[in-house]
Length: 226
Image 1 (cartoon, rainbow, N blue to C red):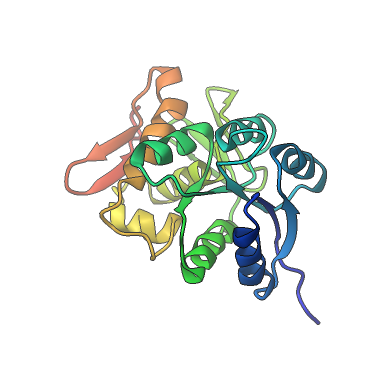
Image 2 (cartoon, rainbow, N blue to C red):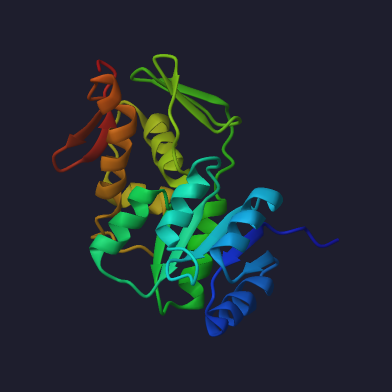
């Protein structure tokens, strides 16, 4: 019996890219929903509850960054941005808006599949992790501190989950990339640093705390005395 694959929502208006994504994913048992406008994509995201969203930034009716912000108002569904915009500023803007990953067009099938697989690796045994005043519930996909709920993207959640699972030890950047992202990422990439900054903005600064610590030459760790 064939296993039903994850449901992927594609929000992309370029026909050639849609055909490429369809051919790449459908043959690997992913179920697909296709939208060529932001309005249609937002409606499908709300009605169909996909497991993953592949989102183009250059949509005809609404910029992809705004689409990301609107999706993040009500769901943490993983979002991989697909864009021809390859500058660091564009990637940071997408991450700040709530995207979990960023692929610069053109990209290879192998890289696409690796990123999609990485988003699916979220089922880990055990339920609640607590450290440094932070509580993470793996089943509910929720994070709280001082009784307040903290909204995280799927990638932010995965990074915090990994750091909590290794606390109080420091975790090197290359290990974070291999476990939270994918081995296809360049270890020199600043993606970890960018996400640590996003996490600090959410789990530390609103509480006047400094639990997420940079350890020179060793990576990052959560401090228990924060």
